[in-house]
Every structure is written in C-alpha cells, then in structure tokens.
Length: 248
Image (cartoon, rainbow, N blue to C red; front, top):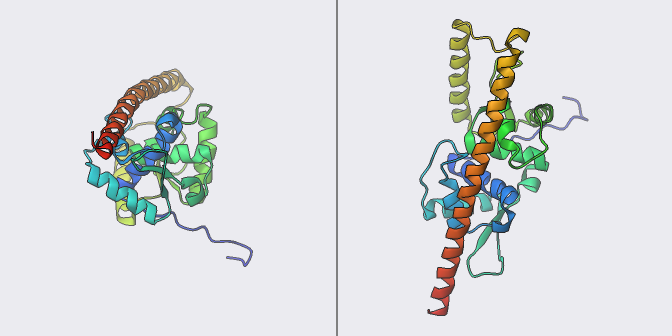
C-alpha cells in the first residue's frame, strides 16, 4: 500500500437484533416519517412485522430497548425529545456509516431480510428509494462492496441471479452464510441450472422480473398496513402514558 492510499475501515459488526432494529428505524423514517422518531413500543412492533422481514421474530419491549441502547452507545442512534412524555429514537447512520440515502435504503433492506438477489433487492428497496432501477442498484452495490459494506455471494462472472449480503455480519456468521450459498450454487451447477440464461430464455426472465416487482409492491402495501397498525398502537401507548402521568 502506498503512502497516499487510505485503508478502508471495516464496517461495525451487528448482531441479529441490532440489524433488525437498525433496518426498522431506516425503513420507517423513509416510508412513514409521520411516525418517526419512534418509541420503543413502535420499534418492537415494527421488528415483529410479518411482512418485509426474514426471519420473523417475536421481540418484547425489553429486547427492543436493550438493543436501542446498545446501538446508541456505539454512536448509531440518539434518543430525542419529540414533544411528548414518551422517549423516541432516531438513527444517525448517514454520519455513522458515511453513506448516501440510496445506499442506506439498500443496506436497510439487507438488514431486514438478509441475502437477496439483485432483482429481489431492487423490488423491495423501491419502497424507500422510489426511482431506483436495476443499473442504479448495481452501481450502489459495487460502491458499497468496495468499502466492505456489501458482499457478493455468487460465483465470479455470474450475471443473472446475483446474490448479495450486507457486510455487517460477525465473521463466524458471514462464513456460515458464504458456505451455505457456495453449496447451493454448486448443487445448481450439478443440476445444470443456467444462471446466465441466453436470449431464448429472456422472455421467461423478464416475466420473472415482473413478478418480483409485483411481489415487492404487494409486500410494500402489506408493510403500509402494518405501519398504520404500529401508528395506532403507538398513539394508544402514548395516550396511556400521558393518562398515567396525569393521574387519570
């Protein structure tokens, strides 16, 4: 390395709960800003959503609060006074990770759902970055990969069905994921699966891409319903806290 080159810092490792909470805060800040910053209760409910999440989890309030404080101590979150008696939380990931809005939208989707193909990732990330197309996504992934914030799990040279993962896994977890996908691609090769389908299969590929987009849009609608439910639960919790504080 020459004196003029600056080493690329490694991304902070995040455990499964930290990734879920981080993804939720980014997602809700972009899709439902009227409910952001978020209360602990709202964060818990959003983490446990059954749409746009993999795996499905069942955190309680203590799980969410403990994780929020852990991320705050590391510089990723702040607790704010949003004019009410219930503390609320907001992320500081743009500064903490030195990423752009489109880059953070992509990372959030990977935090929420784990490794994905480029097609699936684009269909889901448009919930937060509406103008994102596949070439734009690929450029973002390349920029993030250069910083170690994203890893490609597909064999070198594969053009279709490329699978990517975020770079925030602890080393042991990332090694297991790499092994799983390496075994999967090896099995597909043995079965003669063509990742780089030629022109004769283009119509089927395009149809598959359309279905992926429709699935993404359906998931976005389901997410909006879950968000409305989260908002109502948050308002109910805030009202209960206010009544308690007033002695009502």
